[in-house]
Amino acid sequence: MSSLPRDPRADEYPMPFVPYGWYGVLRSGELRAGKVVSLHRFGRALIAFRGADGRATVRDAHCPHYGAHLGAGGKVVDGTVVCPFHGWRFGVDGACVEAPFAVRTPKVALGGFPVREHSGLVFVYVGPGEPSWEVPEIPETGSRDFAAPIDDVCRARVHVQEMRENIVDESHFHFIHGQSEPPVQEWREDGPYAEARGRISRRVLAWDINNTFDAFMYGPGVMVVRVHGPVLSVTAVALTTPLDDRTSELRMLYYLRKPAPFPLRFLTPVLKLVFRAEALDEVREEVAIWDHKIHQARPVLLPHEKGIRALRRWYAQFYPEQ
Ligand code: FES
Ligand SMILES: [Fe+2]
Image (spheres, protein in one colour):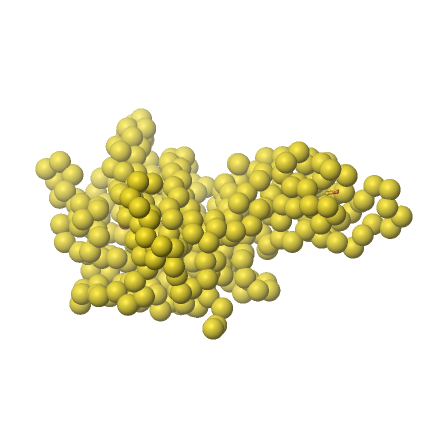
Protein backbone atom coordinates (compact mmCIF):
# COMPACT_ATOMS: atom_id res chain seq x y z
CA MET A 1 0.00 0.00 0.00
CA SER A 2 1.39 3.41 -0.85
CA SER A 3 1.87 6.22 1.64
CA LEU A 4 -0.95 8.35 0.25
CA PRO A 5 -3.02 9.74 3.09
CA ARG A 6 -6.24 7.79 3.30
CA ASP A 7 -9.50 9.52 2.57
CA PRO A 8 -12.12 8.21 5.02
CA ARG A 9 -14.67 8.01 2.18
CA ALA A 10 -12.61 5.15 0.76
CA ASP A 11 -13.89 2.97 3.62
CA GLU A 12 -17.57 3.80 3.14
CA TYR A 13 -19.94 1.48 1.32
CA PRO A 14 -23.70 1.43 1.18
CA MET A 15 -23.75 -2.40 1.12
CA PRO A 16 -22.71 -4.97 3.73
CA PHE A 17 -19.15 -6.21 3.40
CA VAL A 18 -20.01 -9.90 3.02
CA PRO A 19 -22.27 -10.68 0.04
CA TYR A 20 -23.97 -14.09 0.37
CA GLY A 21 -22.48 -16.90 -1.65
CA TRP A 22 -19.71 -19.44 -2.03
CA TYR A 23 -16.11 -18.49 -1.37
CA GLY A 24 -12.97 -20.52 -2.05
CA VAL A 25 -11.06 -20.26 1.23
CA LEU A 26 -8.26 -22.79 0.80
CA ARG A 27 -6.62 -24.92 -1.82
CA SER A 28 -7.15 -28.59 -0.97
CA GLY A 29 -3.42 -29.20 -0.52
CA GLU A 30 -3.24 -26.48 2.12
CA LEU A 31 -5.48 -28.48 4.41
CA ARG A 32 -3.55 -31.58 5.36
CA ALA A 33 -5.15 -34.33 7.40
CA GLY A 34 -4.33 -34.00 11.09
CA LYS A 35 -3.65 -30.25 10.93
CA VAL A 36 -5.61 -27.25 12.16
CA VAL A 37 -5.41 -24.31 9.76
CA SER A 38 -6.31 -20.85 11.09
CA LEU A 39 -8.06 -18.43 8.77
CA HIS A 40 -9.42 -14.94 8.99
CA ARG A 41 -12.34 -14.41 6.61
CA PHE A 42 -15.65 -12.50 6.66
CA GLY A 43 -14.48 -10.61 9.75
CA ARG A 44 -14.37 -13.89 11.70
CA ALA A 45 -11.59 -15.98 13.19
CA LEU A 46 -11.95 -19.45 11.68
CA ILE A 47 -10.28 -22.84 11.71
CA ALA A 48 -10.30 -25.60 9.13
CA PHE A 49 -9.51 -29.28 9.63
CA ARG A 50 -10.38 -32.69 8.20
CA GLY A 51 -12.51 -35.35 9.82
CA ALA A 52 -11.51 -39.00 10.11
CA ASP A 53 -12.93 -39.62 6.61
CA GLY A 54 -10.99 -36.69 5.14
CA ARG A 55 -14.00 -34.40 4.95
CA ALA A 56 -13.03 -30.73 5.23
CA THR A 57 -14.78 -28.47 7.72
CA VAL A 58 -14.48 -24.74 8.37
CA ARG A 59 -15.69 -23.48 11.76
CA ASP A 60 -15.44 -20.61 14.18
CA ALA A 61 -12.07 -20.63 15.88
CA HIS A 62 -13.08 -19.82 19.44
CA CYS A 63 -14.03 -22.46 21.95
CA PRO A 64 -17.52 -22.01 23.44
CA HIS A 65 -16.24 -23.24 26.82
CA TYR A 66 -13.91 -20.40 27.75
CA GLY A 67 -12.84 -18.76 24.54
CA ALA A 68 -9.50 -20.29 23.59
CA HIS A 69 -8.56 -20.11 19.91
CA LEU A 70 -8.55 -23.67 18.60
CA GLY A 71 -5.93 -22.78 16.02
CA ALA A 72 -3.49 -21.68 18.72
CA GLY A 73 -2.27 -25.04 19.97
CA GLY A 74 -5.37 -27.11 19.16
CA LYS A 75 -4.79 -30.59 17.74
CA VAL A 76 -6.71 -32.96 15.52
CA VAL A 77 -7.30 -36.32 17.21
CA ASP A 78 -9.37 -39.00 15.47
CA GLY A 79 -10.87 -36.40 13.14
CA THR A 80 -11.96 -34.08 15.96
CA VAL A 81 -10.33 -30.84 17.04
CA VAL A 82 -9.18 -30.72 20.66
CA CYS A 83 -9.06 -27.39 22.47
CA PRO A 84 -5.61 -26.65 23.88
CA PHE A 85 -7.01 -25.12 27.10
CA HIS A 86 -9.23 -27.75 28.78
CA GLY A 87 -9.45 -30.52 26.22
CA TRP A 88 -12.97 -30.13 24.88
CA ARG A 89 -13.35 -31.90 21.55
CA PHE A 90 -15.44 -30.94 18.55
CA GLY A 91 -16.38 -32.96 15.48
CA VAL A 92 -16.51 -31.85 11.83
CA ASP A 93 -20.15 -30.82 12.32
CA GLY A 94 -18.98 -28.50 15.10
CA ALA A 95 -20.72 -30.38 17.92
CA CYS A 96 -18.89 -30.89 21.19
CA VAL A 97 -18.26 -34.62 21.54
CA GLU A 98 -16.30 -34.66 24.76
CA ALA A 99 -15.68 -32.35 27.71
CA PRO A 100 -13.26 -33.90 30.20
CA PHE A 101 -14.60 -34.16 33.79
CA ALA A 102 -18.13 -33.27 32.68
CA VAL A 103 -20.87 -35.64 33.86
CA ARG A 104 -22.79 -34.90 30.68
CA THR A 105 -21.22 -33.48 27.51
CA PRO A 106 -22.59 -29.94 27.03
CA LYS A 107 -24.81 -29.50 24.00
CA VAL A 108 -22.79 -26.77 22.36
CA ALA A 109 -21.23 -26.44 18.93
CA LEU A 110 -18.76 -24.36 16.98
CA GLY A 111 -20.47 -22.23 14.35
CA GLY A 112 -19.53 -23.04 10.80
CA PHE A 113 -20.44 -23.09 7.15
CA PRO A 114 -21.71 -25.48 4.51
CA VAL A 115 -18.52 -26.75 2.84
CA ARG A 116 -17.82 -28.30 -0.56
CA GLU A 117 -14.52 -29.52 -1.87
CA HIS A 118 -13.83 -29.95 -5.57
CA SER A 119 -11.64 -28.48 -8.30
CA GLY A 120 -8.74 -28.48 -5.87
CA LEU A 121 -10.48 -25.99 -3.59
CA VAL A 122 -12.38 -25.87 -0.31
CA PHE A 123 -15.47 -23.68 -0.69
CA VAL A 124 -17.67 -22.34 2.10
CA TYR A 125 -21.13 -20.86 1.80
CA VAL A 126 -21.94 -17.67 3.66
CA GLY A 127 -25.59 -16.77 3.94
CA PRO A 128 -28.80 -17.61 5.73
CA GLY A 129 -29.80 -21.27 5.67
CA GLU A 130 -28.57 -23.84 3.21
CA PRO A 131 -27.28 -22.85 -0.23
CA SER A 132 -29.73 -23.19 -3.13
CA TRP A 133 -27.03 -23.28 -5.79
CA GLU A 134 -23.53 -24.69 -6.26
CA VAL A 135 -20.22 -23.76 -7.83
CA PRO A 136 -19.75 -26.19 -10.73
CA GLU A 137 -16.58 -28.21 -11.11
CA ILE A 138 -13.77 -26.51 -12.99
CA PRO A 139 -12.43 -29.23 -15.31
CA GLU A 140 -9.08 -27.58 -16.10
CA THR A 141 -8.01 -27.85 -12.46
CA GLY A 142 -7.73 -31.62 -12.72
CA SER A 143 -6.63 -31.88 -16.35
CA ARG A 144 -3.20 -33.08 -17.45
CA ASP A 145 -3.43 -30.71 -20.42
CA PHE A 146 -2.95 -27.82 -18.03
CA ALA A 147 0.13 -26.99 -16.00
CA ALA A 148 0.06 -26.69 -12.21
CA PRO A 149 -1.36 -23.24 -11.52
CA ILE A 150 0.45 -19.99 -10.93
CA ASP A 151 -0.94 -18.99 -7.54
CA ASP A 152 -1.04 -15.26 -6.87
CA VAL A 153 -2.62 -13.76 -3.74
CA CYS A 154 -3.05 -10.07 -3.10
CA ARG A 155 -5.06 -7.97 -0.69
CA ALA A 156 -6.55 -4.55 -1.10
CA ARG A 157 -8.48 -2.13 1.04
CA VAL A 158 -11.57 -2.31 -1.08
CA HIS A 159 -15.01 -3.87 -1.02
CA VAL A 160 -15.04 -7.31 -2.60
CA GLN A 161 -17.67 -6.21 -5.15
CA GLU A 162 -15.25 -3.69 -6.64
CA MET A 163 -12.78 -6.47 -7.36
CA ARG A 164 -15.44 -8.24 -9.45
CA GLU A 165 -16.49 -5.06 -11.21
CA ASN A 166 -13.02 -4.98 -12.72
CA ILE A 167 -13.81 -7.66 -15.30
CA VAL A 168 -16.69 -5.64 -16.78
CA ASP A 169 -14.93 -2.26 -16.59
CA GLU A 170 -14.39 -2.07 -20.34
CA SER A 171 -12.24 1.06 -20.43
CA HIS A 172 -9.56 -0.13 -18.01
CA PHE A 173 -8.48 -2.87 -20.44
CA HIS A 174 -6.76 -0.18 -22.49
CA PHE A 175 -5.06 1.58 -19.61
CA ILE A 176 -4.11 -1.37 -17.42
CA HIS A 177 -4.01 -4.37 -19.76
CA GLY A 178 -2.49 -2.96 -22.95
CA GLN A 179 -5.55 -3.48 -25.10
CA SER A 180 -5.90 -1.09 -28.04
CA GLU A 181 -9.53 -0.13 -27.44
CA PRO A 182 -12.19 -0.96 -24.87
CA PRO A 183 -13.56 -4.42 -25.69
CA VAL A 184 -17.18 -5.01 -26.50
CA GLN A 185 -18.57 -7.40 -23.97
CA GLU A 186 -21.70 -9.47 -24.00
CA TRP A 187 -23.46 -9.95 -20.70
CA ARG A 188 -25.78 -12.84 -19.83
CA GLU A 189 -27.13 -13.83 -16.46
CA ASP A 190 -29.09 -16.65 -14.96
CA GLY A 191 -29.85 -16.36 -11.24
CA PRO A 192 -26.59 -16.49 -9.26
CA TYR A 193 -24.60 -17.21 -12.44
CA ALA A 194 -23.48 -14.69 -15.03
CA GLU A 195 -21.20 -14.56 -18.05
CA ALA A 196 -19.26 -11.73 -19.66
CA ARG A 197 -17.75 -12.60 -23.03
CA GLY A 198 -15.56 -10.49 -25.22
CA ARG A 199 -12.43 -10.17 -27.28
CA ILE A 200 -9.16 -8.67 -26.24
CA SER A 201 -6.42 -7.81 -28.64
CA ARG A 202 -3.12 -6.71 -27.25
CA ARG A 203 0.23 -5.86 -28.68
CA VAL A 204 3.02 -8.07 -27.44
CA LEU A 205 6.35 -7.11 -29.03
CA ALA A 206 5.38 -6.54 -32.67
CA TRP A 207 2.28 -8.69 -32.79
CA ASP A 208 -1.35 -7.93 -32.28
CA ILE A 209 -2.64 -10.95 -30.52
CA ASN A 210 -6.37 -11.52 -30.60
CA ASN A 211 -7.84 -13.40 -27.71
CA THR A 212 -11.37 -14.26 -26.77
CA PHE A 213 -12.26 -14.26 -23.15
CA ASP A 214 -15.23 -15.75 -21.37
CA ALA A 215 -15.76 -14.91 -17.73
CA PHE A 216 -18.11 -17.23 -15.86
CA MET A 217 -19.28 -15.89 -12.53
CA TYR A 218 -20.58 -18.16 -9.81
CA GLY A 219 -21.97 -15.77 -7.22
CA PRO A 220 -19.90 -13.03 -5.60
CA GLY A 221 -16.80 -15.03 -4.71
CA VAL A 222 -15.87 -17.27 -7.63
CA MET A 223 -15.17 -16.46 -11.26
CA VAL A 224 -13.55 -18.57 -13.97
CA VAL A 225 -12.05 -16.65 -16.89
CA ARG A 226 -11.12 -18.61 -20.00
CA VAL A 227 -8.84 -16.77 -22.39
CA HIS A 228 -8.12 -18.39 -25.76
CA GLY A 229 -5.63 -17.06 -28.25
CA PRO A 230 -3.15 -18.14 -30.90
CA VAL A 231 -0.27 -18.11 -28.43
CA LEU A 232 -1.80 -19.10 -25.16
CA SER A 233 -4.90 -20.50 -23.56
CA VAL A 234 -5.32 -19.77 -19.89
CA THR A 235 -8.04 -20.55 -17.42
CA ALA A 236 -7.91 -18.19 -14.47
CA VAL A 237 -9.82 -18.98 -11.31
CA ALA A 238 -10.43 -15.69 -9.53
CA LEU A 239 -11.39 -16.03 -5.88
CA THR A 240 -12.54 -12.79 -4.28
CA THR A 241 -13.14 -12.95 -0.54
CA PRO A 242 -13.89 -10.31 2.10
CA LEU A 243 -11.43 -10.63 4.98
CA ASP A 244 -12.85 -7.91 7.20
CA ASP A 245 -14.99 -4.83 6.79
CA ARG A 246 -12.37 -3.03 4.75
CA THR A 247 -10.00 -5.62 3.32
CA SER A 248 -10.59 -8.07 0.51
CA GLU A 249 -8.41 -10.78 -0.95
CA LEU A 250 -7.99 -11.63 -4.60
CA ARG A 251 -6.48 -15.03 -5.20
CA MET A 252 -5.78 -15.82 -8.83
CA LEU A 253 -4.98 -19.35 -9.94
CA TYR A 254 -3.81 -19.32 -13.53
CA TYR A 255 -3.95 -22.67 -15.31
CA LEU A 256 -1.96 -22.48 -18.55
CA ARG A 257 -2.74 -24.98 -21.26
CA LYS A 258 0.39 -26.91 -22.14
CA PRO A 259 1.42 -26.46 -25.79
CA ALA A 260 -0.43 -29.16 -27.71
CA PRO A 261 2.31 -30.84 -29.77
CA PHE A 262 3.96 -33.10 -27.24
CA PRO A 263 7.60 -32.18 -28.01
CA LEU A 264 6.82 -28.53 -27.27
CA ARG A 265 5.71 -29.27 -23.74
CA PHE A 266 9.15 -28.40 -22.45
CA LEU A 267 8.14 -24.80 -23.23
CA THR A 268 5.55 -24.82 -20.48
CA PRO A 269 7.87 -23.39 -17.79
CA VAL A 270 8.95 -20.63 -20.18
CA LEU A 271 5.34 -19.79 -20.96
CA LYS A 272 4.63 -19.63 -17.25
CA LEU A 273 7.52 -17.25 -16.68
CA VAL A 274 6.47 -14.91 -19.47
CA PHE A 275 2.88 -15.01 -18.35
CA ARG A 276 3.85 -14.37 -14.74
CA ALA A 277 5.86 -11.29 -15.74
CA GLU A 278 3.00 -9.91 -17.84
CA ALA A 279 -0.11 -10.64 -15.83
CA LEU A 280 0.90 -10.29 -12.21
CA ASP A 281 2.15 -6.72 -12.53
CA GLU A 282 -1.13 -5.67 -14.05
CA VAL A 283 -2.97 -7.01 -11.03
CA ARG A 284 -0.61 -5.02 -8.77
CA GLU A 285 -1.52 -1.85 -10.66
CA GLU A 286 -5.17 -2.59 -9.98
CA VAL A 287 -4.48 -3.20 -6.29
CA ALA A 288 -2.81 0.21 -6.03
CA ILE A 289 -5.95 1.79 -7.48
CA TRP A 290 -8.32 -0.27 -5.33
CA ASP A 291 -6.43 0.62 -2.16
CA HIS A 292 -7.47 4.24 -2.54
CA LYS A 293 -10.55 4.44 -4.71
CA ILE A 294 -13.95 5.32 -3.30
CA HIS A 295 -17.20 3.58 -4.20
CA GLN A 296 -19.12 5.70 -6.67
CA ALA A 297 -22.74 4.71 -6.15
CA ARG A 298 -23.60 6.68 -9.30
CA PRO A 299 -20.57 6.53 -11.58
CA VAL A 300 -20.54 8.73 -14.69
CA LEU A 301 -20.55 5.96 -17.28
CA LEU A 302 -19.90 6.46 -20.99
CA PRO A 303 -22.19 4.77 -23.52
CA HIS A 304 -19.81 1.83 -24.07
CA GLU A 305 -19.41 1.27 -20.33
CA LYS A 306 -22.48 -0.85 -19.83
CA GLY A 307 -20.80 -3.66 -17.96
CA ILE A 308 -20.53 -2.09 -14.56
CA ARG A 309 -24.21 -1.24 -14.49
CA ALA A 310 -25.22 -4.77 -15.55
CA LEU A 311 -22.92 -6.33 -13.00
CA ARG A 312 -24.19 -4.16 -10.17
CA ARG A 313 -27.79 -5.03 -10.94
CA TRP A 314 -26.96 -8.74 -10.93
CA TYR A 315 -24.72 -8.56 -7.86
CA ALA A 316 -27.41 -6.87 -5.75
CA GLN A 317 -29.11 -10.28 -5.30
CA PHE A 318 -26.28 -11.34 -2.96
CA TYR A 319 -27.18 -8.75 -0.34
CA PRO A 320 -30.01 -9.11 2.14
CA GLU A 321 -33.04 -7.07 1.10
CA GLN A 322 -33.11 -3.76 2.86
S1 FES B 1 -11.53 -22.94 26.45
FE1 FES B 1 -11.63 -24.64 25.17
S2 FES B 1 -11.81 -26.30 26.50
FE2 FES B 1 -11.81 -24.57 27.78
FE1 LIG C 1 -8.32 -5.77 -14.81
